[in-house]
Every structure is written in C-alpha cells, then in structure tokens.
Image (cartoon, rainbow, N blue to C red):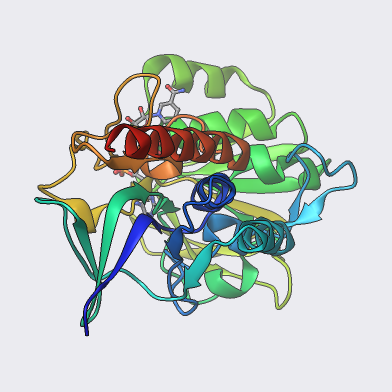
Length: 315
Ligand code: NAP
C-alpha cells in the first residue's frame, strides 16, 4: 500500500502537540497527530498532564481542572477542526529527504512538514508504588502542586539545583521541607545550597534514599534507607517531590536533529525551527527552563504558525 502523504505530522500529544494540532487544523492542514501509546508512562497520549490531578495554574479555569480532562479538551478542540489521531508510537524516522518519512512499526507515513512535540519525562526513583501515587501526594513539579501542601511536612528527593529550587519554593506552603540526598554533599550550585541552608523551614537528611512510599490512595509516610549503614527508618511526610532530573524524549532523533548535551532539541532563537528545514520542535522536548503546560502550548502555537508559513513558502 502506498504511504499516505500528510501536510503536517505532529509527533506527541501534550499541550504543545495538541496546540499545534488546533492551529494547523484551523489552517486546513488536516494534521496527523501520532499521539503515543496509552500503556507507556513516558510518552502516553496527553503527556505529563495525564499523570497529574488538579491543574490550578492553567489560565481560563478559575476553579481548576483535572489534568486528564484538560488534555481531553485540547484533543476534542483539535478534532473539531479536522485533526486526525493515531494512538501509536513512532518507531522510526527519516528526515534526510522530502517528503519526510515516519514509521509506526511497519507502516510508513509521508509528510511535507513535521512538528516534534515528544516532551520530556521526570526521572523517577523506580519504586513500584510511584505509578499509583503520582498526583496523590507524589509529585515531580513544585510549581504545579506545592499549593496543595499548605502547612504540611513534605520531603524532596535530590541533590541538584532542581531539588533545592523545589524545596525552597515549597517552603512558601509547607510547614517543613526535608531534602533527602543520597550522598553527604549537594551537586547543586553554591548559591542554591546557601539559600537552602539559610532557610529555617528546610532541613537535610544526608546519605539517605527513599526506598518505599506508604499509602494506598495518597502518600502517608515514606521509608528511607541510610546509604552508609543500611539502616531503615520512616518519615511521617504527606507529600514527596522527586527532583532527580528530567530526560527529553529524543532518542528517535539522535544524530538527526541538533541537541544540547542533555539531549534537548535545539531550536533557532525566537522560533521553532530545528536544523532541518520543515521540521519544527515545541514544548518540553526543547525547553528545560520553564516546563509549564502554558509555555508548551504557546510554543506549540509557534510551531504551527512556523510550519504553516514554511509550507506556504514551498509553493
Ligand atoms: P541534576 O543536576 O542531574 O541532579 C540530580 C540529583 O538527583 C543529583 O543530586 C543526584 O544525586 C540525584 N539523583 C539522581 N538519581 C537519583 C536516584 N535514583 N535516587 C536519589 N537521588 C538521585 O539534575 P537537576 O537538579 O534537575 O538539574 C539539571 C540541570 O538544570 C543542571 O545543570 C542544573 O544546574 C540546572 N538547573 C538550574 C537551576 C537554576 O539555576 N535555577 C534550577 C534547576 C536546574 P548525585 O548528586 O549523587 O548524583
């Protein structure tokens, strides 16, 4: 069977990809969104918001909205204007000639332009209970969820700038924040460390890892293990923030699209252009600074406009 030829293929369906879908659909480009696989935790359709509960900082929802509901709204809005969806994962790409080629297992798709919005994932501790408790006291985003922990004792895992930044931010709400680090010194910059040490609401538990999160439907204490002597103890926290780094979902594009040392796609300043003409990138896959649904959505809009104008210029 001849591969279908699309004007735009959008890879990934978080706020960036779906906003790009809304805009390109409204420009009559009938985008094909390859939205990811439901079974996957790192690139599930809808992106990281599918792993959260209430979203209170997305403008336009004064009473807040559940993350999955927000993403379903994005999706229906794109569908209404003619976006097509494939609930699969892209398995291979070839951007070396036009039309660009994208494979989902053995099926080949062709496209005049591509928008990459595959997002990033938070690194997790690898505990079995993380899947169950994410969004229920377990979080990877202080900006998103800190507000829910007013006057509570919470813990943050990690020893880099992110962990200290999250811990400092969380002291606006929490009564106490314990930073848990697996070694006896932080990796974070000196200025960030000094800020944490000077904050009376932050204490540090050195040489410990979190080995179990208690609670059936919400976090109810954690088990920590001493990395020096192996002793185990419990901490009665009601919230746990994992801040041990992020990884962009860019394996598919290695050696093809320009990336920084951490694997984030590089886009040209003030645009969504990648190093390959006709291939655009938006959202967390190219942003390690802001990582918000609203900024991802904004960059998805940019990618849609960039691709639409670029396509127009091709004829
Ligand atoms: P990071 O620098 O890679 O730090 C990750 C931390 O998590 C490390 O302390 C590491 O411990 C710990 N860790 C990793 N895996 C773990 C595990 N399985 N269990 C327990 N602990 C684990 O990541 P990041 O803090 O997200 O920062 C990423 C980059 O963004 C850095 O370049 C950072 O400077 C930058 N950043 C800057 C700012 C700012 O300037 N405002 C804010 C955030 C991030 P070890 O130290 O033992 O390896």
